[in-house]
Image (cartoon, rainbow, N blue to C red; front, top):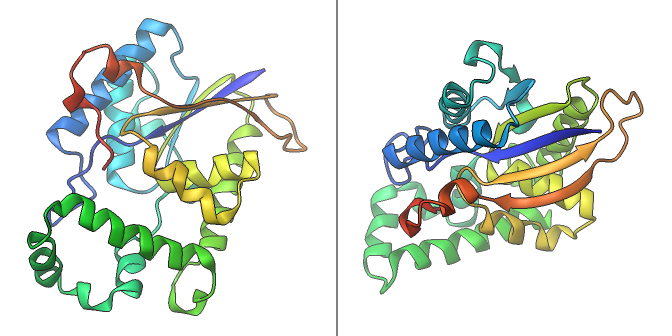
Length: 236
């Protein structure tokens, strides 16, 4: 048997001009993950990532501490990349292509973060439902298929310990696939995923038939909990 660990990236720069960059806290989370990997003796044989910089940087920082493969050895898979958050939001609320208007509306709310989450949940529900597929450059169905293909690519490899640094969307899509969760509930997984949280799958290494992996655990973050600091646990 072999193990595939799916890792959500560290905290990104939410609200900044460049979201696709780890915040200082995100970099700390990644380093803490690397220390936990090393302490547990589960240093990867292979490491994969999607295209986003936040995913690759999380892998780089974690492996620098854990002693795993260097960044230049990353296996790059498109299916580990994330969907276009901005497009999903703007197709639901076109007026929010004007970020100033979004910020102004959120500033009026008693809880701006909660207000944004409610708007965004509605936007995602519209995308996932499939009734407006022609509005999107990438449909939910196509995105999910890409994530599942990345899963098959990784579980057909011969290594016994593979770590894939990705985002909430692909992890949710993969878990949905493995547990046969309806589309309408797939993002209930995503909303709960912690930055640098780890999801572990077990599979038979090198199976040419792409045998179905089994889910060992979802969204574990002991490397953050052991510090006793709730501020380390983030969701964006």
